[in-house]
Length: 108
Figure (tube, rainbow, N blue to C red):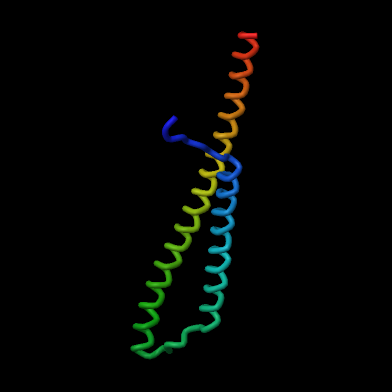
């Protein structure tokens, strides 16, 4: 019969849940890391060099925070899409069963 395409909707649904769990773990780890950084305060000081270092740090930190937030949101969105894909496969299987049963009933 050649190549076959087999789908396991339960596995897809499980994968969606795992992606979401990973996103939540990444979010928790990022928040813990932010708290750890905040506990250090501003160790570079307030002199001229320290102010330059502080400015660079702040710019890099803001960019990193934005990237992490965007990536976490993207992971959550992908998890939702994978779960929707699983639901669509479940619905397609249910519809197929109904149609096959109709044909069986018609053919007797």
